[in-house]
Length: 297
Ligand code: CLF
Ligand code: SF4
Image 1 (cartoon, rainbow, N blue to C red):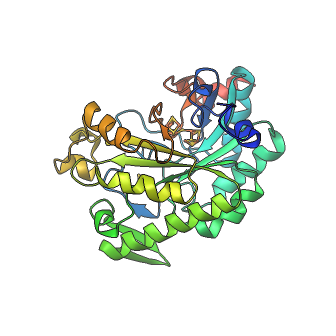
Image 2: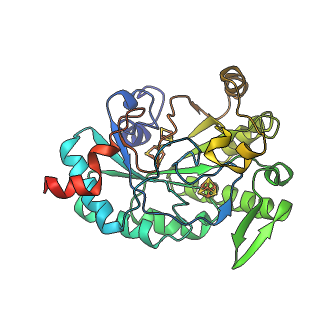
């Protein structure tokens, strides 16, 4: 709250529903699915979801061009006045092939300057793009960080695509880890608020997330959001098909509690879709499909 943080930080979080627990009761966010490509493979991916880079059942998000995305944001903002934040969080990685992501941010900065811009990434391409992120006044960046030890990472990421080549195994995880840490440090230096999302994968990174929490805090992360792996086989993820289970509510809470005293924890995440619209936990995306927006005009 306003009593325990500097004014300039409070100004950035007070109406961001993910960065402030209090704000999520009053302010809404929306996502536009303009980023279909990805530059890594996660064993929990099914490309339907968002920021958490998570896998849950549901319909595939409606992919948009930057022009369609801007039209949608403007239409939603006029219907939902509490909509304060626009996030780009998939369905792939927002920075893997960033032309559409930045084209969308650029148009929004010009046409809807009151809307806060937010993005979520796996971090691989982040260091190279931090300066461009700052150009569009993006105040909030989420990095999904599931490990700080490449041996752990090799169990989560089968490969990355790096410098025009596919890299596998521990080497892939080492490169990803270095880029994530460097990207986080660069954002912190520039005053961008960062949130770290971690997917809790029992038997793979449960205890390790305490170390992740410590390392990201050291590098200035503002919030740490530890989310449960959702891996039912019918979602078709590699983990789901190979018998990897998600954590129980107690296991999730135990890891979150073990991180207390480290980086501040977010505990109100609702694992949104890549095209979510509305308050957290409320999904109004069906009201704002492209054909409906055209009817509104
Ligand atoms: Fe979206 Fe993510 Fe920005 Fe929020 S979601 S890009 S920080 S505006 Fe929020 Fe949704 Fe959890 Fe993400 S509740 S999945 S933490
Ligand atoms: Fe899927 Fe996201 Fe991982 Fe890419 S970064 S493989 S889109 S979960």
